[in-house]
Image 1 (cartoon, helix red, strand yellow):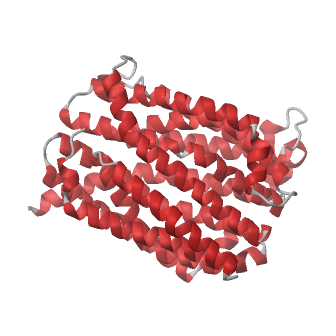
Image 2 (cartoon, rainbow, N blue to C red; image 1 turned 180 degrees about the vertical axis):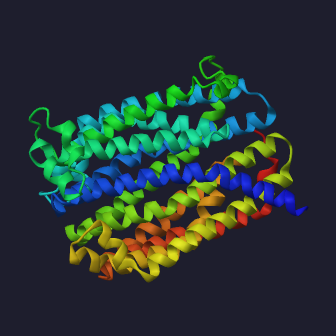
Image 3 (cartoon, one colour; image 1 turned 30 degrees about the vertical axis):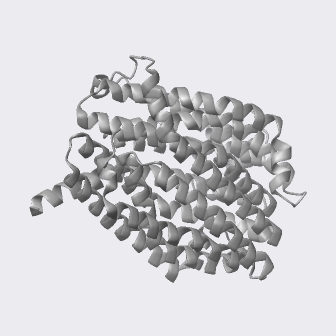
Length: 466
């Protein structure tokens, strides 16, 4: 295979991946900023926000299935030059987002307190988590709809839109967080401490109460609404018109196909995130301080996974397009280049986690106990970076080719058969505490990476029709 051919595909991977990586990183950085703001309120508030966010993500993670289905279909149709069907894939994604979100929102706001009590043992934390959940459930429709838009823009190789929209909404989220969490009485002091007192100006026009944890959820809701609006505005761009995004046409066969593609991934994400919620409950049984520490570690880890997700989404788009063009060799080369970039980026981050865990944690919490407890946990995450780079990237490769069932089944099985039981066994029964629970996390990441590598190596994904 000519060298220029390899370099061309490698360049396409990274050009598509960079905007997604930046947009995903901005989301996580803003989430870390949220966490830093909430952590000033106290350990209980930090633990409540962490658990509330995770429980909401159990439902919102179904949006990954929507994104996968829309991206898989639109990238394949892009390769086949059936451009209007790309827009149809987006419309179907929005329909499915509404069908999923509305009943879950009604159930969530009705039983927010019961849901919080099911996963938390500390009675001082439950009310804060209930406040966060009640508001957060209103965000589900907008978050799921945004996932459908992400799949569309990634599928038609417009990943820059993904970046611009995500960064703008995340900046809005952080600014609103500051006001809603601290209120007009404390907002000036907050921005003064940061050296930017002029940013408090918009909050001083009238008295505004400090809403604490509930304020963080309200800010997220407003930012989620803006994200959808911003995505819609980009549909009016001239370069998007060939995909006929406003030419709504109900084609049941296409809708059913997207359900078949997205359902396994969506259900897998929801069941896997439920497993992670149980993991959080296990850590909560160890202690509230350990739960707050794990919230910090999880957010840092989440940030580190974003490069592999960005590279994976880029490779999924290219795999789908090349298979649509009936160029399986190019698709195979895209996989190799994606793995190279994911390992390079995540491996470098993992090395930093291993060598400087205390310094990284101290950026997000100045509590010496959280730093001490979190250091070995972050080092475990550092080691797992190399495996996660492989597992995440190849997961996207398979789903981009149209094989969504196999990786979903593998992920769910490993989560509940190995990860959750081992975390409980090491953390509770063997009294290894939070370190034992996070060691159990390795039993999820490593086997998944190995199985994904073996599956992709067979090359069977190259023959899938979408």
